[in-house]
Length: 177
Image (cartoon, rainbow, N blue to C red; front, side, top):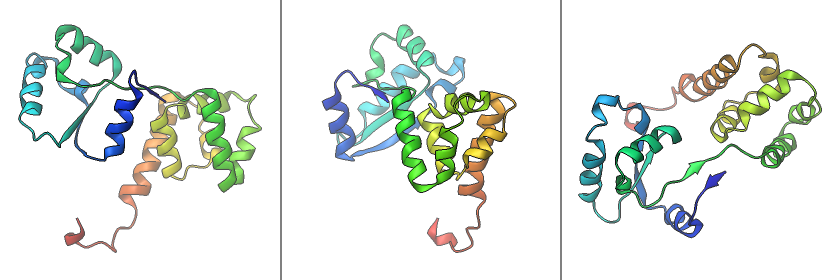
């Protein structure tokens, strides 16, 4: 699901395990603060030790707009776009899920239902597929949620948060944090 022009660069970077700074949500910076962001980011990254890698995330459209306004490329080595899973990749993921939970096998047999396509469209996003799996959502829960795409997204996010943040964490003490 990654579009990388130089796969060796991306593989080496990810394989090194040396990156340690992730700046998430470049596109969420208010427009007024973006004016000199490129220069400030370049100066900040330039001041870091060479062994520290930096990953900046944002939506594609906002990146392209920022890049058009600052043709220096924001001082980035490589831009990577996470693409939706192909139909074959998604089918493969469902087959793997069905090996652990037969409910996913039943899900695959419901291809002609409108709700199935809505769920499939959402889960083609690698983030939402992972959140649904980590959130332990069953296919029936996803299929029963047949109102809107936004409500289906909210279900996946809420279930993920319930499983990871709201779950009983009494076994952990403040020192564990």
